[in-house]
Length: 277
Length: 326
Image 1: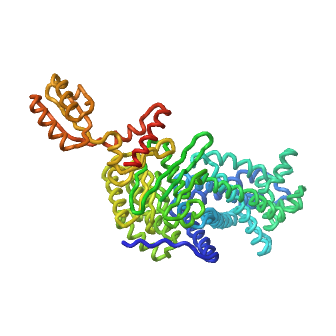
Image 2 (image 1 turned 30 degrees about the vertical axis):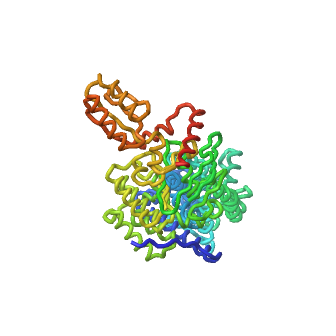
Image 3 (image 1 turned 90 degrees about the horizontal axis):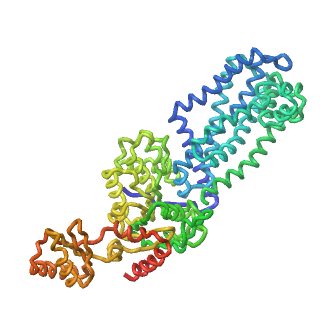
């Protein structure tokens, strides 16, 4: 048995190449996690499907949509956006598990790129989100949702959803690093609900009490939902909403995720570095 | 591997308080200490996982902290908690780590196969690690630490939670690595583990190395060899005490419930033979007579067991000096 001798990158270019390769290796690791735990895959896939059916048909019969559209047409963009944010909980638990189990120790004691662990996970989450969106897209079509926008508008809507997911991964990463252990992840779901409910996800914000409506209108999730409605050409789009962020939904759906990343990226990186304190 | 005056301070406790240790290349050093003495903290600093608050350390010729990348390329770490991915299979773990060492896809696979084979994990290679037993997991962890030949290998309590058979396997693996020139720093609470593997033992307490030497040196430290005589009849004990006192020139110790009298025996064989002769002449019926070296357990308890902190610090300073001079 001959053990290979260790190498480390010598030039800046090689360092970049290493970082990219390490990131991909870590991304693969998370994708392999998915393929190794079919129950988790089924769980994460089933959740949006069940939600679409439940909300679409249970709430759908009671809620009237501004502009007299179909509730399911109104609902689907909100469900997309909600799924992007719900990923935070699972990701935070995965991060906390890694830190608790010591796998992170091995990564950090290896000559690999510092950023690869973090960025690789982010990549995997976004790829995972693409899978979620695809599934929900099909499920939506099955329950009568349609997109009426042009191809580029539809692509833009999907892009904005993924941007929200990307921003959310940095929250998930940060939360995972401050959790006391994977078991503490249980507190996350109850916290996620208000974030997705105090928004225009399921009902128009006009129906809420004044202050609550304002909160909902400034909720980043609302911006993405409103932008998706506008771009998909679904009912409840900008014209009927009065609040400024929703009037400029596409702009805000771009700005909000960038703001979130500007806040949580440094926080997460700092927290990650603090593992060595 | 060299550490000088390492400090690590958490809020109000000093986890490391002037930690000094030098381990020559190609040797095994056992870092021995009770729980909370600072063993793991020391290992985490030396493996670049923690930043020290003071002091400096070099590993494989590179400064920890300033040349982390160089250090990381030359070390292996097997932690107290196995640092492998539970959800992946054993093989996938090794391939993944191999790729992170940039062996290339094919070489990473070959290397994984080699390691699985030499750690007797081939059969379990394609099972998820979470189905592994503690011993298998530890062996996989060790395999992952030596994907590239590390110059310095850190083993943080490698046999914690292992049954004797698996523990022996891990020890064999470590010995093989050392035979190939790897320097090993091993932390353990088990003295026999240190005795079995290490050529140098450092006893750590309250964040400092309080004694450092070969196992034999440490054993000599607390009085060296002892001659022990077990008599058949309890009434012979006073006579035995007198005989041993005159033979050894020291004050013998009596354990009445064991009928045993013992005294330090510096010139081992000479004292044994004259004790046998003198006891025979005195007509004492002896059940057993033996020379024995104190166990590391006794050394350890003597070094770390002192209850009052102030005298213990003074005593350990003295012991440290002795250890250095011996």
